[in-house]
Image (cartoon, rainbow, N blue to C red; front, side):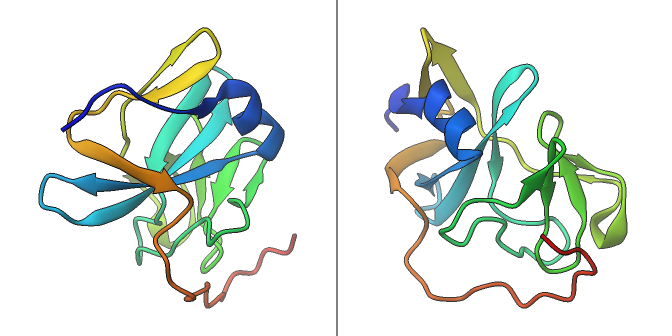
Length: 136
């Protein structure tokens, strides 16, 4: 699979708060990946909660507050830098990561397991069914 495909810029991710893109894995399945800013730079996580595979970003940006990605269904909080969750239904789990590289402010997909398909998510209209106690 192609490596080191340019995705976007660090500035874009920081300004938008997150950046969503779609990849194909080695089994030919499409997956969504979320770029998020963290204190150490940029991290890339699969765009789904570890509890029930609920999507964080449904096309409007990921809900992030105080350095944590918020699951819109149950309110579990995932650290943007480590991907770890220590509360709620997803407690003691960590988001699957995708390797990216940053060079001179540009972000590249550097994970040999995935092929970049396009910016944005997989086309579907399914939004979150929230049971979260959090409000935005």
